[in-house]
Image (tube, rainbow over all chains, first blue to last red; front, side):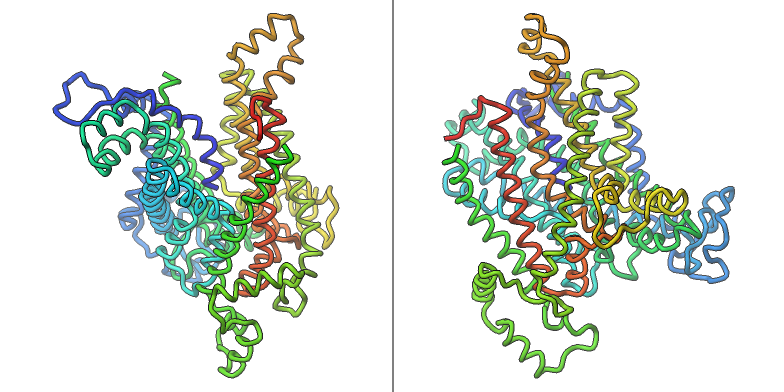
Length: 316
Length: 307
């Protein structure tokens, strides 16, 4: 999935080379960097503000699920099974969205399931960003045999379809916690970022300011971290933001197939999987978790799209 | 061109070996193929030892890999959990999945490009906006939710299709599963084509084509479309991998006994020969598909010359 997303975002990769550089230091009040321009653009756009608000809400739900519901998602009372219709007018009460096969509140399980999706999505993205950027930066900046070697490694990882590889890794573990899933997805997902970073670094390493920094005697690490990285970061961050939605989807798909998180973990994908069998008798079991999952993925995708448009100087 | 293809094929060899070795390590080093055969109770130590010797599992991992690849090149993929040779499973599964993939790819390419061109030419109109919103929704709602819902509504409630396809499905039975499989990719193809078409309509060569009095249709098809397809073709190469993983979900929902089904069974039962065998073949197909994509570039864009 992330591979697919990369392609759409790549056209912006030409951006950084043409971007005016604002060096750190006592910034004069009028200085406008790429990021502050983008921010001025974004905060007026509903396609940014709405998903950002939804994501903020999801983050709160993930951090403090107890604020949203009083019952435990694991508390099961068979008197309340799915034969009881949801009470759609009882907002935010346990019976609001009905009960599942085991008499657990669907609403509570949706709230508590947020954490798995958000934690996995964000952690995989963070790991992939750090590792992928490092590899991409080294390959792009040094070129030569380092680039040759690292690019071959990237090719090898790209030769394995993402979800397929994740399944093969995950099934070897009997109990799979969030960390197992995170590491498996990051292990296979870093190549997307590495490729974008490599291309981005190659396009800016010949820039005047890099040459200037080198001729002033700056060390390799200083050039990489202070000059190359800040200017190469924009397309990478955009790809990562869009990929985040893809990682959440991946977790849900894996849980749906029964090779994602294992019990007692609560995950939207797992609940949707179990709801599939009840679709004839109680389709709401499938509907509500799917809806929330869809909204979550959509929010991350839209946020990424909006940020990409704001960072692309061609569209200004 | 011929030399380029040969050079690419040679370059593919290390990537293929590396990718399959990685899969091999993931299956054999992280998992334990012998205990996978026995379920929760665990094997008798003597039996386990005998099995290890029979399948060369007592050798060091790199040697195991060399032995395994040696067998593969003589057509021996090992046996699946039910005693059938893996090649026999493949013989049955691959034609079915090829049909499913064919349906998905045709729908994705034809519908996706058509929608992309139409919306790209009418940027900002209501049709454009509604297609864009639809693609976002399709991308956001996971395939397994859409698949289960469509199967229920069309198959159970309305009775238009069979909820599960027959063991050796015809193309028309695979229409709905193929559409479900292709939906996400279809949305991406639409968006990519739209962006690309919208960018190219402002290009100089389009103005020139209009200026020399070519009919609109000809400008759109010969000049605009051909140049707009390059990013789409790139995407299709990478997408073959997505379709492979997606097929596992789709085949599970519609009970299609293709590659995804066999692979999923192999993964669930930790049957290493099945998993590694199928994945090796899939990786090979994936790499070849990407080679085909690179060759297609030359057809679309004569500026690209291969030497």
